[in-house]
Image (cartoon, rainbow, N blue to C red; front, side):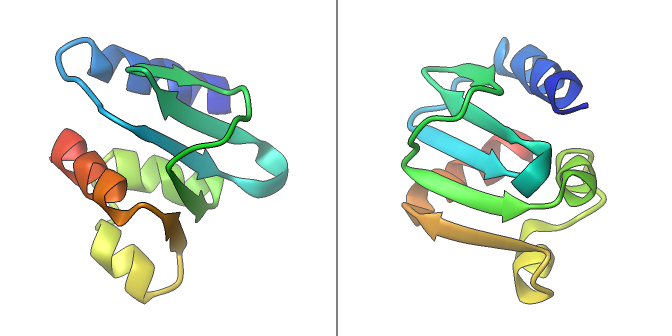
Length: 93
């Protein structure tokens, strides 16, 4: 399932660029890392990590979960470089 999400993110990156590195940490389900304008499910260090369930990641990427609301409700936790997390908002917007 995460590979499908990563593939979808990769398609979205064709028309956009993403500077920096960002990791979606979905716990036991795995990770998706955006780095060098690529989306991969191979775990590696990133400038910013977002801890989120796979279900909420899908909602976030489809616009059904507002990032600020998600943080406020504890549905996602951000650590590391907040500037990178803000770039994600521009990419999704």
